[in-house]
Image 1 (cartoon, rainbow, N blue to C red):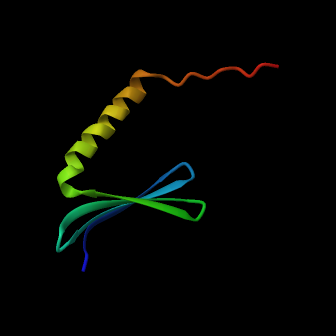
Image 2 (tube, one colour):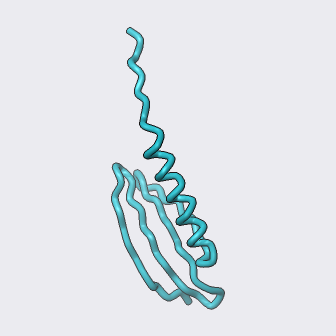
Image 3 (cartoon, rainbow, N blue to C red):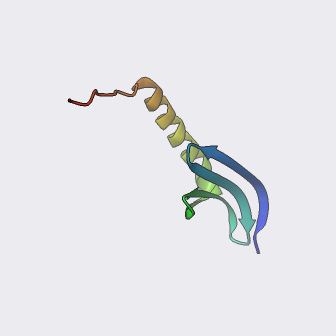
Length: 76
């Protein structure tokens, strides 16, 4: 049996993300589900890895900020 501890939903462009912190007899985990066009994909992160996951996401955010998007003009 799973116990729901937190449930959040966010919309990013066409994608919908569900963040569910749950607990079962084996421990706590974060279930992240992406829904786009009726299709769902899910990853599960054990609670013991949440801080490492957060740190890695923060590194990605910093790298994104430090490397602006480069757009190229299409050749005519």
